[in-house]
Length: 406
Image: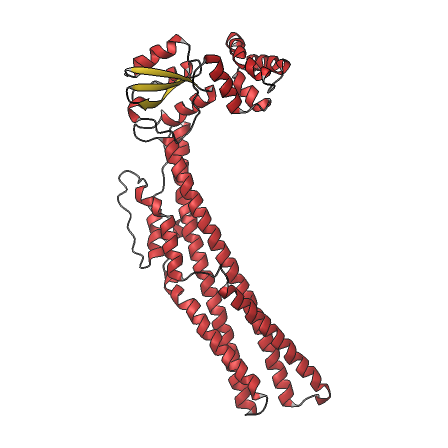
């Protein structure tokens, strides 16, 4: 190991010439690599903060060959992976990465080593071979990510696609959280409106009852405070209703949630599990039941394959969280609607009771305000609540099963 590290130290002298690492530091890194049994390039990159690109460029100039970097999205042809021996590749540190016509591009830690080309010819049939230099760590990543998959199933590419859809679902859940925050603000504004109308009702009763007439002006102050709170509440509520973050309709929420789960069309099933089925009547409930049939079973496997299984599982869990977030948003709409209805019924009933008890007078205008405001709140609450009523009886099957496991 020490001789190998000393030999490789010469490959990085160009880094000293470029001022990226001092000569003494390179010697210390060489000794540390020999003592700890790890790659010299790993110490240079991780402990002396030399950019990976600079280290790879130094190797490229040393061997006078083009370089190649690890990229999990690299479309390695499946025919290049068939029959490769991972143990031998790990010892020789080479990996086929590209097929360009009759030429196969080989990434190698030491492209000048004769055994690399001999092994490449043994495992891969091609007219021509092109050797490129790569970091040892990158070659190990190629072996770990691509060699353990069946031909045609490139693990790195799969994980990238799964990560993209997790981000898509996360963006939509963030937007749903913004919608729920807006509806919470709307309910807070409705609370101010209820307080204001309550003050108006109290002052209305006291003025009509003619008690403590000496402080009659105090009743008008209560009325003014009530009007202020009511106007403030209405303003805040209408501001949410008209803002850019206005919560979309019920069907829009469900349709966009379904679009963020469209990756399931090309998703995997457990062998023998069959196609998913659902008895749900609503689209959102069917989506939730649809996800329950995608649970991933983890079998003993290499670490790379296990990471892919876990990535599948994270996407399933992210999909379940997305459906649950849509449910929470729908229920937030329902709570907002019920809050409007509850407040509207209370104030309409109070206004009618005051008109019945005291009869018509100048102050009846406040009774009409209570009745009209209550009717408007009831109508608005119905518009919020009715579209979500059907979803309350349609909970996905996975929700109940997971709750029982906790």
